[in-house]
Image 1 (cartoon, rainbow, N blue to C red):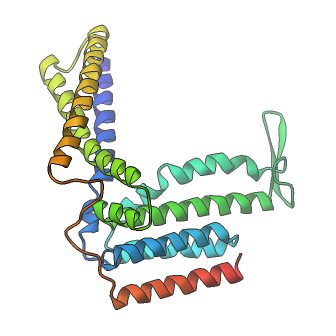
Image 2 (cartoon, one colour):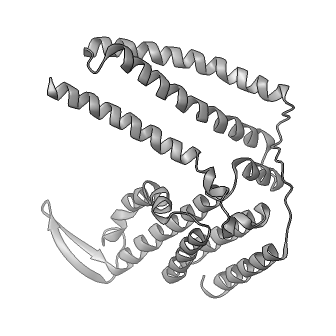
Amino acid sequence: MKRKSRNNGFVERSLSGVLSFLKNSLYAEEYASRRGFMQSLDQRIKTLSFILFIVAILLTKDILIVLALYLLCLFLAYISKIDLGFFLKRTWVFIPLFSLFIAFPALFSNFTPGEELFSFKAAGLALVITRPGVLSVLLFVLRVAAMVSFSVLLSITTRHFDLLKVLRIFGIPQAFVMIMGICYRYIYLFIGIIENTYFAIKSRVGTYMHYKKGQQVVGWNIAFLWVRSCRLNEEVYKAMLSRGYSGEPMVLDDFKVRWKDWLWLAFTGVTVICIIRFFR
């Protein structure tokens, strides 16, 4: 019986952890409301500057320059009053670690020949790690980490609908922006439905349920959520249309470019031009 309770607790903890992660991802707009450096910049200038930094990261082959840009991103997060622990978890948990897994074979001489650093045997095979392989993997992972960090910093220091409006200003198709806006609101609501459904089931069946009965309950709720999500999708869209939504994101505050924005853009432009000119 204890084992069954532990298994049930594992399911509950797993579900709670997933929901908590999604909530933190979707509800991170509290950082966009803080009085930090990046929050004070014009949204268009900020987005353009981050695009320039990402382009510079893609074009440079100097590891030190990529590392310097990554440290600059961390500094910008700090002066924007973002918790660095939260920021590092958002930027390193999945994509950079996955990129390391992809680039791992490049460490070995079979894929990247060059100066040998050290060798070892594994499963009867002689493996040699080369200096060019280590440098190429390090450059690749740092590039991915830096680009992800700038993208995440932009998203958590910019209100969602401000970012959608900036995308329209930069010529992103209206249909794409509209789908993003609807999905954002729909996922926000869908998470609450999943959480409420789980606790409703738990309150009615207790802490333990036979696995066959559990399969039936899960199947019923999947079908119910599917039907409800289709109906809810239509209702949300009609509600948006009834309130004047025309496919264009609307915000209360107009964008205003100030002297600080021009200084930041000038700094970004000079930095990126120097990187492309001297460190490609």
